[in-house]
Length: 114
Image (cartoon, rainbow, N blue to C red; front, side):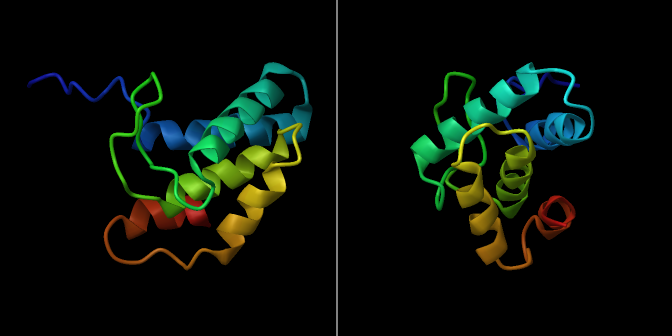
């Protein structure tokens, strides 16, 4: 089996981690790094355009797709549970306006959207 050179990129499996730490913060509030992580990811995505940020990036922040995914939109909205900054509401609003995922990627995007 060949090594996937994109395995080091921020991609599909990376999306759900912000949901994990944010729900953890909302239930237990034990690790302040979770707030910092939510603030950091939301600040990055906001800098890319809340309505249009890509769904995959290199670790130095370069987009490697042009798709604005409902799945990443959903986990970015969940990050608002731990975020300290008021920008979180914009992520929740953006998810609220998003249509139910269909077509390509509907299963994974749809599960995260729920």
